[in-house]
Length: 415
Image: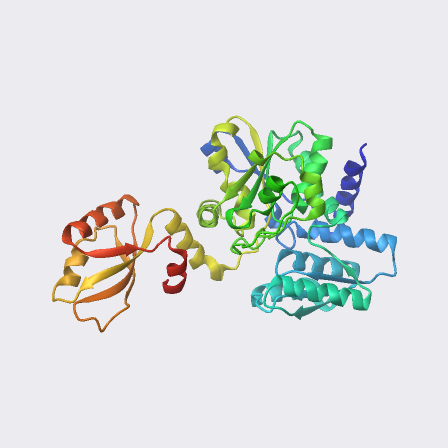
């Protein structure tokens, strides 16, 4: 048996002391839609609601075996990796110091503390993750602790490979296609490393958020590169630079195998999975499902496994997710309307709205203008075609307006 396959099997067996295999579930809704066998590997149902526990546990297990005296572990994370490390520290009865940015939501801090209990200390430092990471690595060197990388570590990658071991065991055969989210690359490197040895006929697709496509950039450059700007909405996968070790194991991937998911479109997928299937996915956890429409022509009649990598979703973000989804679907738009300052002008505008149109936002931006006043107006509707009709009526009536829905700078400031 190849060495990586053997180590992945060993890691999987060791994990059973911590939790049972996460479910592999056939999804009837998606299978019917695409005429395929769509299976979801539910990493969102792991004890910390993500696959990150696997890699953290395996790396800690192997370090403890090699050096029993090592009893202090350090990581830097604002999310799932922190929770995985905390859980593993409590399991092994070792000390953990977890560095998190000062801006980390309290919910994530509380969950990390719950999983780690007395075994961990949380240090809040840095406004940005790079500052937090630097502080954690300095501390690690000073106290002689072991730093646990979220993805750039051979033992972490080996632990993530247990996802693939379970898929083959649970399905009882090799799937035709596995769709994987990519952030730092640890999950993708582990799953593909095992399946390419154990089931070489399996095909792969990799999904990154459009605003954090560091893997695609690395493939184009032939080596990891640092993105100048990252959209942090998909916080579980928005990584500025793919890991060096994961990339070295994924260099065989063809650029056309990597798909990019727009952040706002992911919101539509999250809402659909929640409302139709009752499945709570975080943005990164929805990536593999989000690209199914793009693959519809390729997957008919095939067996497809989507790895839903995490379900740590803060429901306080639900209004933002709904807003983004509506805007992407063309069901909500924002305008700056130049309203004539005369009696009846507002009534005239309101009469142009159809029965399915609803005003979600109305705010005068200039109240002192003598002849015209600028109004910020947000409109929701049930069909995107309704906006074309409204625009035609506004034009015919001579109203001056500007659609700022896709103007990132203006929308961020005004909306």
